[in-house]
Image (cartoon, rainbow over all chains, first blue to last red; front, side, top):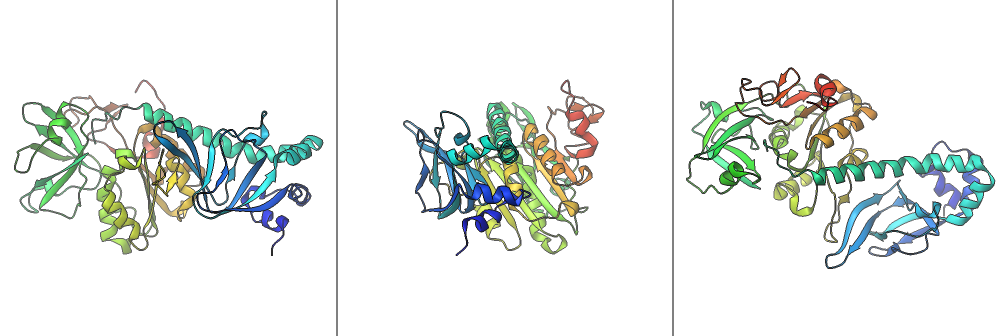
Length: 157
Length: 255
């Protein structure tokens, strides 16, 4: 059975990260699995953890009264899940539900925050890996929003 | 959305000899004329297919046509997707919403001449499951060997088990060689711009990216100037352009 550090080294999130930092952050990590339809976290939950998806698919959902839950993004192998562990009050703002059997590396948010706080180089390396996917998700959400405002009255169809 | 099949009387009818990406002007008698992309098989000579979304008076009238009704048609007009130039290359088709309509003839051509091309992928983004076009065919294409099909929705219910997110998020999920790929993009212009940039970022050259542009067309033969983009008449010089030839113009908001 592979140790958590070995599993972590196989994830694209740590690509290019110094060995010492990988070993350091592995101390905050554990291996987890979610069955299909199991919630990884729910809206309003304490955002104690974030996840590196190793295998599977997680649907990010919001519940709309009268309509039910709808998915606004799916997160798959090699991607990160959860950013609210970074920002007070550390509370999840949507549901995350495993669509299929999903294996992930879960990080204790407070443990990692403490390590980033005590060594800002570690913190900067973490930010360099967290910010690009978050900015990309923000950018694509904007594009989707702009296209929704398009009334679709293109003349040529 | 409605697909209209118009009977053509054989291969000597110029209307049935279109190239993928071209459009016809369809005339709903007494109401008006609009450009509609040809969405059928370019190898089919007995019928010409258009897919129409009812959004205005003319398209609404076209969408209500019944079997045996008459419609005015002139064409085909405009430039086409580079299906011949793509021979031997990987081919990436990227469609947003009704942008799949002008790309469907390319899909038919690729399927018919599969051995001529390298890896082939269709990336298709739609708002919801109900907005997906050609659903039975999408399922068929998905099951076709050596044919990568990825579909993503902007939002979905629990009945959807596929991807949810923006269409560019599908790029890492298909196999192609950026250096040897011809990409064809069709959809809202915001989507075209962002997708072209995403392709440039991963190493697809601007000369290998083709886009289909949309402006208000009227005459379809480059006289009236309604569809002018800089020095281009989109009805005549376009609608399909190599990206490097127009990307500067796309940045000029006054156009």
